[in-house]
Amino acid sequence: MEMENQVQKQTATGQQLSALSPKLTRNTADNTGAPESRVSIIYHGVQAPIRSMDSFTYKSNSRLSILRLAVDYCGADGNASEGAVKECSEWLISKHPGLSLPELKEAFAMVANKELGEIDLSAYQGRFSVKIFGEVISSYSEYRNAVLAAIRQAQGAEAQENAAKDAANKNKAFRAQILSDYERLLHRNDTFQAASEIPWIWGKVLQEEGMLQKDGQAWISAKVEVRAKFMEDTAAMIPDFTMSEGTRKEMYFEMSKDADLFPSQLIERAKKLYGQLLIFKNLQPYVRP
Image 1 (cartoon, helix red, strand yellow):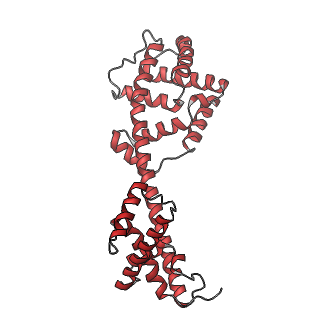
Image 2 (tube, rainbow, N blue to C red):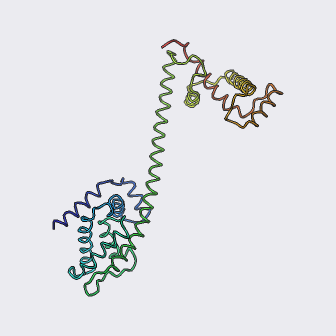
Image 3 (cartoon, rainbow, N blue to C red):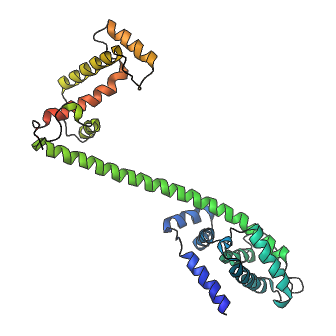
């Protein structure tokens, strides 16, 4: 009885190590057809497998568990099956060290319910055998692998969902901070002395939030400034890692022939500067902090 209590105590503790979320458990159960209780047993079996037990504890507890299964499910004579139980214990830790002891009962219960195919649990002349035990555990192991694959898939989907929610929350907070900082600078600008100092992302966010009025002249100014800087940097051979050297030279050649030409490759730069110009013109004159 004392050993039985130790086994039950270990089982309960193992199931408390890393509980599945109800949503994850339900999703796995729905995808596999397994009861939620079985999904939980399998998951916690991975968290506390027999290979994590010390040798003495494993030997005594596994033999007690296997003996009880042999008697309860196979009608075996306990005294006549001691040798087979010992062999089963040794076979289990050798071939399936990733299983847990609570899973053994689940495996035999599934076989008794015809959930793992036709496996004869009858102990011939009351003697339990490694053959019976091996068939049950091997069949269960295949079933278990499918459930574990579904658990990992559900965990991956849940992790992606949580990551997306976290990213959305961070983005919301980031945008709110930009709006707050902008509102403050409208009353006292102690931060930016020039439009180029303003983070370009501010312009994008504030335009999306409807905080900036469109300004055709500012757009023209942005294009003129971006064009002039491109020509100047190219002539000075200042590196530009946003495009190939061949493309850059071709653009420079064409733009040198046509003063009004504004290549599409420079549109994004103009948009960023445009946002900075829109913000800066609305700010109060710079004052020292």
